[in-house]
Each structure stands twice: as structure tokens, then as C-alpha cells.
Length: 411
Image (cartoon, rainbow, N blue to C red):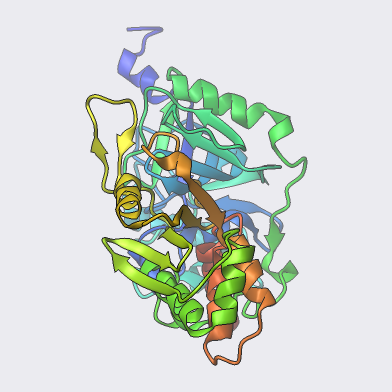
């Protein structure tokens, strides 16, 4: 006993920092993610936070002092979207969900929690999976939300080394299926996170979240394309097929592509093959054999650890061996096409030093400068543009669109 209270009771009241992962899961396929409110003000200018996945935390978490909103990069790394400070919990975490629902609906009406004139619970009633009796809408009210001045990453892998700010959370992991993680004041991760939150040099000096009424119409902001229609905007095979199709159909486009993007001159007849020995794109002409690996959100796969070496054997080595065997005195070149938001660290892979990363922004700029009469070309450009961005904001943009569309529908 300490001060008349059992040790476990003191632990439950420890201050904690919470990481909340946004915009993931199958729920988003046909619904508005409840966390969409996290980056908007309501009509009164107040900021509210919804904690994934269900709005309530375990009852032992009663001292959340700050929240860091993040998006996943890979299994060991997340990118910080914003921080929420000055938190006021809206509910007691121990409440059953039907009681919490009633309290929240009363709170929403008493405090006029509206977005462009529509009550928050009325907006979410339009979701397919909303239960009107047990749904929780708000976890915290936040005094302020601040965006980072630059990209900030949190990682549990000491080998991660982005050019931007990276902070190592040692002795911890990000559970694969979890949508939030808490770190108590007695943990090493807490110390790191607290220093990140308190470092004013990392953050904007004012709250830049907006009311819905301050946001322009969003339906025109996201380019429509056929991949969006069939929900294949992140399908690597689709993009590899499109590269193959357009470069095979247009010889002049191919020659410029070899020169302007790959830095190679071409000679004689050329061929572009798909999935030869699992190589995404294999280009061959009289002078060159070119290996292109195309990545969207995935990393390097097919890993096989060599117990006698420091580097990791992977698909990159396999492709290199194939090119070596078939080069016949031609120049061998190796490339990886990667969206700007997908940070891939190649240093640990054997033969990776021979691979050059080309970002999708380079590909988008190149194909944008070339005109084509092909009726699919504009859709191709629109699809590329999504991955030419430094941040993968597609889910946020989709949720923002649905949020505004639903508000307008209810009104």
C-alpha cells in the first residue's frame, strides 16, 4: 500500500500518451470512419477526438494526457499526422455502451456538436453499420490540434533511417491489428513521445484544423479514374500492366522513357515482358537488359536470410542473377518504382546497391508531358497522380468527401 492506496490503483492512474491509427480497416469501404472528426472543428470551433476502433478505451486508461494521430507506413513505422493536447474525456470508460450512447447523444445536443449545421449522431446514422443504441461518437474534447511542420516518423526498428525526422521507440512493438497503443509514464517510449510532443520546433504554432463550412467542395479534388471505380488504386499488378501497355504501344514514348526516366539509350527492336521469373517489367533491346520492380505499399519480399553474411537475400538478388545469366554483353540496369509516400530502405539487401529507386512523381511528370490519343491515357495519368504525393491522403480525402456528402444529404 502507498498512501492508503494499493499499488495497482496507482498504476491505473498513471499518465499515458496514446497513439491512434487512422483510416484503416474494412469498415471504411462503405462507411464514414468515425475518426474523420479528428481533423475538423465543429461549428462552434471545438475539436473532438474519436479513438479507434470503438470510441472507448479500456477502463484502466483514465489518464490520457496527449494523443498522437498516426498513419501506418509499415509494420515497424508510423507517420505522425497531428497531436491533440488539452484533453477532456467525454465518457467514463467503464460505462456500458448503451449508457454511453445516451450520455453522448445528450452531450451532442446540449453542446450543439454540429458540422455544417448537422448534429454529429445524425451524420453517423447514415452509416451501414451504425447501431443507434450503442454507438459512441466522441472520446475526448481537445483544447488544440497541431500539425507537424515536417514529416515525423515513429519507429520500433533501429535500422529505419528516413531523411526526415525519425524517433526510435525502443523495447516496444506496434501490434499488427491494433488501432491504438498507450504508453505509460514509466516506459521508455513515453519519454520519447513526450519529448516529441513538447518540442515546439516540430509543430505548427497554431491550430490549423477547419470547420466544414470553410472547406471548398471536395468532389473535384480527387481525380476520377477507372482504378478508383473498381477499387484497384493500390494494385501493383494494375500499374505494371499499364506501364507495359503504354510503353509497348508507343515506340517514341518508349524511347523517351528509356532516356528521360531511366537514363539509357536504346537500340534495335525492344520487348517488354511481364512476370518473367516474377520480374514485374523486363525490358530488352540490343544494348540493354532492364529489370524493373514496381512497388505500391509493399516492401521487398521473398526474404531468405544467409546465415554466413550480414546482408539479406531477397527477390532483388534473384532478379540480378537472372539479368547476369541473360545479359550477353548487354548493359544491365535495375530499378524500383515506388510511390513518394512509400519509404523503402534497401541497405540491408544483397545487390541493392545496383538498384535505383524512381519515385512515382518522376513517372507522373514524364507521362504528363507526353500527349496520347489513347482513350485510357488520362485515366492512367490520374491513377499515377495518387502515388506521386508525399503523403497517401486518399483515405482521408474519401472520408472527407463522404462526410460532406452525407451532411448535405441530411440537410
